[in-house]
Image 1 (cartoon, helix red, strand yellow):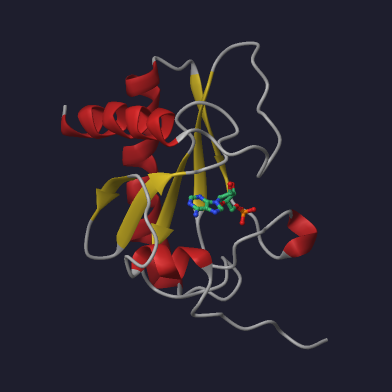
Image 2: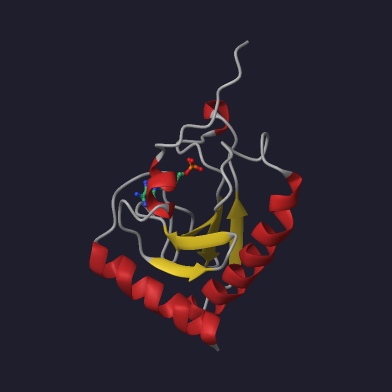
Length: 143
Ligand code: AMP
């Protein structure tokens, strides 16, 4: 089997380079977090390392400490910002798992008792809704 390689023109690489827009909620030297444009629930955020890898399988293990430090920050912020009951954290590796964008990222989704997630990579959310969600998360991150 031929191993797939990292494509420098994947959509998250373009977002990281600022070539296409995103609703950013967090950035440091290693990590960026922005709103998922097809949220599975309100406040669905993606936490993305700047270092290039397709997914967890080919990533440098040094990535995971900074990545999950920010996953925890964002998980706390979405729980607070959306008044959620819990938070789902998901991560997919290769097409068989449901991965659709081939740059490592972690999904952070606020959850509410009794409310199921919408389908993965379903409908596009309105930009104004994403902007409002991003504002709530930025405010929670500052507090
Ligand atoms: P995965 O299936 O884990 O690779 O998830 C990729 C995620 O990226 C999906 O939830 C998509 O909704 C999301 N997505 C795709 N394009 C964009 C984009 N331009 N900005 C933000 N999120 C995106």
